[in-house]
Amino acid sequence: MKPIHHLNSSMAPASPEALLPVVLAGARGHGRWHLDNLRRLQDKGLVRLAGICELTPLTEDELGGFRAAADLPEQSADFGALLDSTGAAIAVICTPIPTHTDLALTAAARGVHLLLEKPPAPSYAEFRRIADGVAAAGVVCQIGFQSMGSHAVPAIRELIARGTIGRVYGVGGAGAWSRAESYYRRAPWAGRRRLHGADVVDGVLTNPLAHAVATALVLDGATRAEDVAGIETELLRANDIESDDTSCVRVTTVDGGRITVAATLCAEHPGEPYVLVHGTTGRITFWYKQDRVLVQRSGHGPQEFTYGRTDLLENLVEHLEGRAELLVAPDATGAFMKVVEAIRQAPDPLALPDDAWYLEADENRRVVRGVDGLVAAAADTLALYSELGVSWALPKEVSS
Image 1: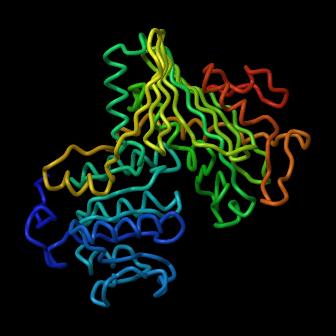
Image 2: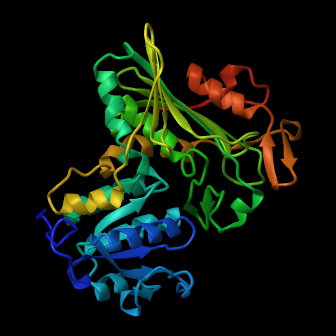
Image 3: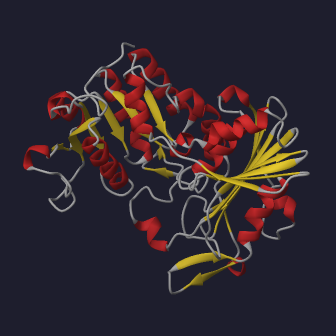
């Protein structure tokens, strides 16, 4: 791959035509975050938002924030045609999960580099199609696990390497969030395992709290598919959906490591998700959305740090210019995709009994009794729900 050079903020101001043209596929929902970020990077002189691909064009209000009519991006529902007409160098894909593969390969075939939202694909086979396709095309693909841009991640890895908390014997992850019932009605694919015969796998561990799984794997050092020796899953649901909203997973690595992540979208008191590194002489807690780290170890008082974060699109641009290593290449998410595959192949989630949850009427959301403490206990002990004595937990499903 040859570096791409353009004028940037460290040089003379660039004309819009000199900036890297970017097409955003999916500008509503979570895509609004990418739209705002692209405005920020355009104002910074790094990229130019050249096109937006949506089935229904964005309105003037949705496109607010551009300085002049000349800045308005081209809009089209035809992704390939939009890439061609704009001469896009980068495509940001933030569309429904089942569409990722075809859109990514459409961009790759045109030599367009990618920022692909997480989860990259609904199955391991589709993930391999993407990873192999972009490699064959010679384009760069960044997977959108924003927590991997946190400067806390290399800092924690350094603490582990120095033996700050002794020998690491496991990593836990906990996510206690809440979602109203309307969350599952926002799109046809929401809360689905399959749609029209295609895999979706929109569960709590694979989509909204996927960062907890991926970050726990990264801190353990088990990022590649071949690092995974076995996976145990327990998938449950309180909501009237096809997929899971209260689940846990335990990954065993080829090095004997254990990573247990528990999550729910039915929390009693929603809080910040975190990853917990267990060592023989201490522990490290990482609230990955806040870039905040707490180190606790024998013979020392607790130490808390807050770190900066590198934006993944900004990192991709710098990588294309030959100024930075790519932070989240596809193969660095192979272990996460093995977890997605295990969840995809597991039996459909078990509906929790009626007495296990209640409706929070003011917020129109379902709440699982005691789930906040259960999620925390799983991360703390590396145990699955069924091993914590929960009456409604089902026997684990094991995937090798």
